[in-house]
Image (cartoon, helix red, strand yellow):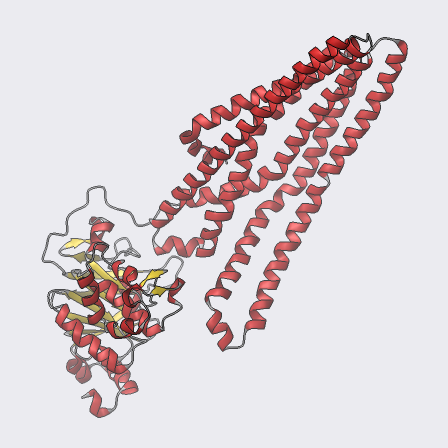
Length: 577
């Protein structure tokens, strides 16, 4: 957790203010019992009313000052802790934004969300408490011991007995409870995962009548988290009663032995009262420490998880000296490219070689799991090809020698699963080009065959899109995703099975419109439908991660058995001809 505190450097002024104001607050609280003892011993006992008024006034001023210092310290600690939380969240989000899909697969989306929100909040809350207590608790404890011993050395042996007993109690309880906090965060991740799947997959769950099953999954994860939370809270709940028991026993001992000393005439009543208050301050400082023991372990577990994210290096990074992709615009060339997912037994792609040039449409077809989506994911460097696994060239330059920003600026990528963001239709299309004009937005929508349904929506291009695009159909989402790529007018278009939700008529009209708009660009289309790829300049047939055929529709129909089987399963003999 200390490593995370390096982000506090930005807030050194409020932190210094917290420490200063807390110091003065503690001094005022330590001085009040002495003044109270003087009022009792010199004012009340001797009947000196003016002295009582005078010292009482001083006490009121010091108490008011202590309150003011406390308010200022609380304000500044909250400001510093909130700023720290904001900074860490920005750092984590910025770092995660540079992750490749490989890092997302490793940690998991639900865990990343939990670490960015819940875990940082845990650390932020503890920091807010620590800024106040890391000065107040030790100073009040040490100052209380000094003042108590100075007041009544004869009763100081009680303090020497109480402190070790209290410290051992705190240590024993904390040692038992601390291991559960890491487990608690892991189980919270599990609950978030189940909840996220249940909410995002609600349509599938309802369509298969699996609501009861998902409720059971959630209930099981929730029960598991609850049981662990109850277990750790039971352990930690022992701390406060133990503290109170020791405090009360200490008070009884002080009153008993102090009463004997008053009877002997060796101690004044006011001094005994001050001694009791100093002991209470010592005990209160130790209780503050015990509260820290409750919160710090959980925050420490959270800090470890946050540091795991910040320490994780992205497997894909920009080259030190990025080379400009200065060849013919839009050229894509695979040279003996191989790729394996981490931990996989066999490569997802093996020895892939082909060249796609501007003005050409290259289609990729194959069975499920043949590696089609993996292949096109290498182009924008969502994944990197294996070391010594060939080369992927864009405009004659290896993609690993081009900055990711420049590389992706050349690509209009339409993913297999259409993703829309909350906002308007125009906002979603402009996501491809921030400064797109109204005319460019409308042109892209018309080419993507989206203009018709947009015109029917209330507000047209200013119609609202719900989170995840839940208020439009799958085909409409795909067409808006395609419009988002078209408005960019990139050198390279990549359509990863982006026509699957379209009817055959819309599919044909869209491909005809695309052909006119992409005459100077390179187009790569991943598709399951033969009708989508029949007119391509080049069709690549993938099977088990390898190219088993390449050519036009007619060439493949004449010589490639796998392509023939795909075609015969979808088209009649007349259609395939």
